[in-house]
Length: 159
Image (tube, rainbow, N blue to C red; front, side, top):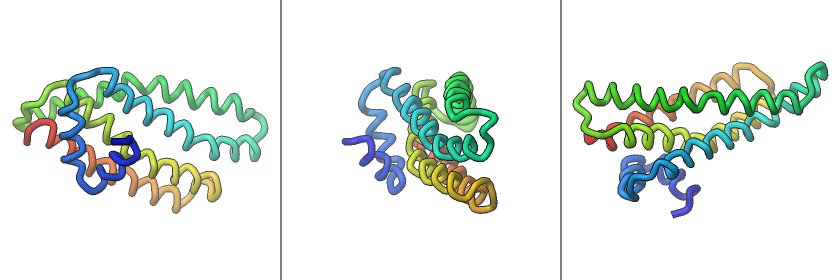
């Protein structure tokens, strides 16, 4: 299926989608692609807000802000691998039988699934600036991520 169709289906049936992705076979490049898509779309969601900030505060150019955001997101890659390992270890303590690969698959796919919501958040943030609307929407997105990730992790860990 197309990536966008899988993302939409993941919001309705996350267990079925992650089960289908897991049955596709073990491929580290396949799983890393999900993390890369998340990082690319997270960067894209930041661009309108960074453009607004560059206009309001011209002491730092848009290119400098975009470059800093890109480097910052790239620096998070090891952290995401660490979070996937921690999620797997917690699931293992609770009786999970999956492996390290499955832990990465669940986390990276859950991150990919929230990217449409992050793009909306980026637009809201670029129009409204930082405020209660952005905070509330960010919390809703985080809650959606937690629900998706925990459901997918339970599926891949065999619980």
